Image (tube, rainbow, N blue to C red):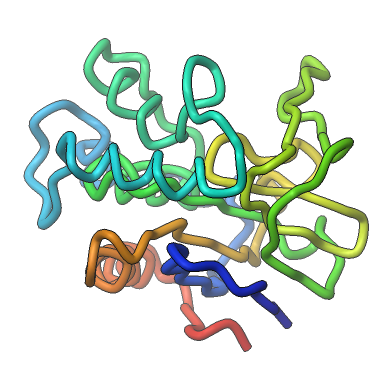
Length: 209
């Protein structure tokens, strides 16, 4: 289902989740929303070393992870700190909680809006996609991305609008964009992530079937 091009730094964890009901019928419980707040107790904590290693991963293909192009995990730290990190749905909230505390960027794709086969590779010149409902685009050249049959659809900075979750979503493909510079962090982040999803009633399959 998923192939990954060789990469000297990437320590990817990919898995699928099936939720017991559409996400529109599964509001995030209080305990999950609490994990989005500053100072929440969590088994993992990010720091400058984690942020630097993640940026090194994104730089490898020539991408510049700065400004508006910085890793999504860095946006979450700022949003949590200023109180603007609000609940979206159970799947995205779980993603944001793990990404916030682990420091690893995470992508969540609606499996029913994406088209197999899937591949992780570095985007080339001309690759781009719309990443929000306003129609804004991101230039993907040099950035590690998830590709489906229709083209790139997710990465460690901004995921494509066309494959994002919505209220009808029941099946997701999740990618933890880890790096070998942080030995064991991808695995420990996934272990905690799996606990959260199973607490929400989701069934998790890892590795990707």
